[in-house]
Image 1 (cartoon, rainbow, N blue to C red):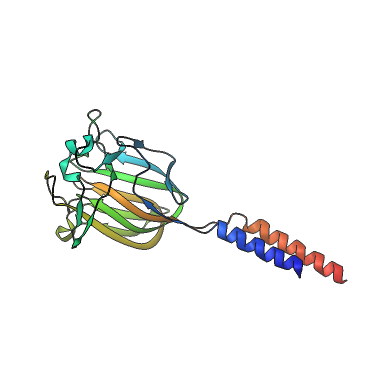
Image 2: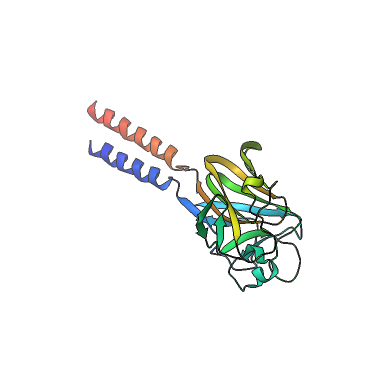
Length: 227
C-alpha cells in the first residue's frame, strides 16, 4: 500500500508539472526597437517563431509611452488607449508589436498594412488579443494544423484607427475564449499593433508514459510478493 501511495504522489507531481500556466504577453521584457523572430520566449511556457510581412519584414517592439522614439514616429500609438466598446476601460499598454516600415529611424508601424504571424512551438490556448489603432478590415485568425479555429474581422463598430492624433487613441479587444491552436495571424488593413495577448500553453505531461510504466512495475511486484 505504501508503494502505491508513493506512486500516486509521483503521478500528481508529474501532472502538476505538465499543467499550463496562463501568460500575459505584453512585450515588457523586450526593449524598444528589438526585432522578434525565431524561438521567442513569450512566458508561461509559450515559445513562438514570429515573422512579419510588409515593410522591411520585421516584427519590432514599439514603446507606446509618450515622448519615445516610437511615438515620435507614430503618435496614434501613444498610451493611454480607450476600449472602443467601453469608454471607462482605459489602459497603458507599454510595449507593443508592429510590422516595421523603415530600415532606419526607429520603430514605426507600416501605414499600408502588414502581417504578423506567431507560429507556436506547441499548441496554445488563446484567450484574448488586444489590437491597438487597427482599422476596419484587419483580420485576426487562430489556426490549428493549417485549419481555421477562430477568426475575427474588424468592422466599423470596432475600428480603433484614430489617425495621427496622439490623444484619444483606441484599442479593440478580441475574445477567442480559450480556443486551441498552433498559429496566430494578424493581418492589418492599415497601421496597427498588437498590444497584449492572453495565452497559455496546452499541458503536455511528458513524464506520464514513464510514470505509467513504473506503476505497472509496482503492481507486478506487489502481485509477486503475494504469490
